[in-house]
Amino acid sequence: MSSAWFFYALAAMVLWGLWGFYFKLARQQFGEPLQPSQLLGLCVAQFACMMCVGVPALLALRVFAVPVEFHATATRFAVFSTLAVLLGTLMMMLALSRGKASIVVPLTALYPLVTLLLSQWLLRERLTPSQWLGVLLALVAMGLMAQGRS
Image (cartoon, rainbow, N blue to C red; front, side, top):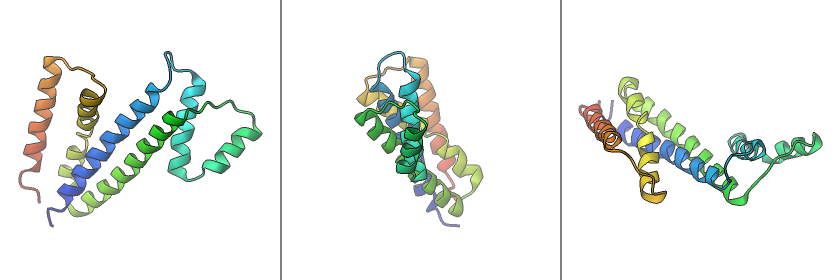
C-alpha cells in the first residue's frame, strides 16, 4: 500500500474544515436570532447544490408557497460549504482506498482544526489557553498518526 492516502486524508481534512468555515460565513450574513426562514434558505441552498436539483426544488417550493429567504452572499457561502464537503468526501474515499481506515479516519476527523484556524485568522475569534492546548495536542496526535503511514 502506498502512502498516497496521506495527501488525500489531509485534503479531506482541509475541505471539511472549509465546510464548517463557509457555513459559519453564510450564517453570519443574517442577524440574531436566526429566523426559521433564514435557516431554511441556507439548508435549501446546500441541498440544491448537493443534489443538483436547484431548479426543481425552487419550483416545488413556489408551488406550495413555502416561504424561503435567500441572501446572495449567504447562498454563495452555503454553496462553497457544500462543494468543500463533496470534495472532502471524494478525498476521504481516495485516502481510504489507499490507506488504513484505522489511520485515515482519525486523521480526517481533525478537520475542525481548519475551521478553528480560519476563524482565528479571518473572523478574529479567540481561544483560551486551555483550548490552545487542545489544538496543540490535536496537532501532536496528527503527527503521531502520520508516522509509519502505510
